Length: 181
Image (cartoon, rainbow, N blue to C red; front, side, top):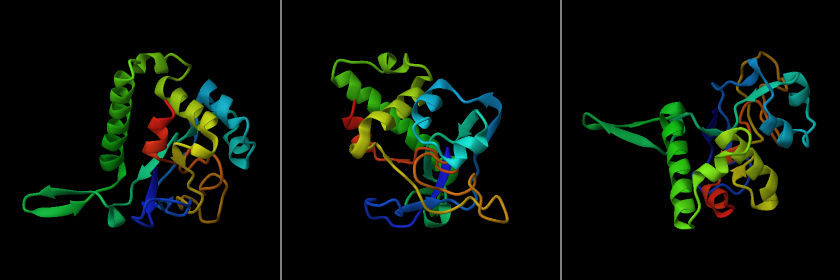
């Protein structure tokens, strides 16, 4: 999961509502080839990032708030509130999104298992969703910021239009994401 910094607590309407987190990471896997679900979606986006990944799996797939300094999420511990970010915030919230998707499909008489049969399981589902949703996308594309892993601007460490190795497909727009199933 890629990291972002929330620039505004107003419901995102532009790609600048969240920026790539300066302490994030990402890039091509050193172990995995590009999976079918990334090939299917990302082939339509011929970008410098894909060329630089040289046929390897692009990481991350998606992004979520990681910067605890501006996080709208806090926990109460031993009499005080502490803002949180990173995977401590993002992973549980992505789990909640997936659980909500399961509830939504169950109420419609469908099941999550039917969605997971395409190549790539849930990852395949989110890439296919991004591909088919067009203007009603379940993801906000993060196009601003860098993970600052290099001393100079680089294609692999900067957010940009479409898929990038810093914020993946983007951050979830849960209402749209669920509405398209």
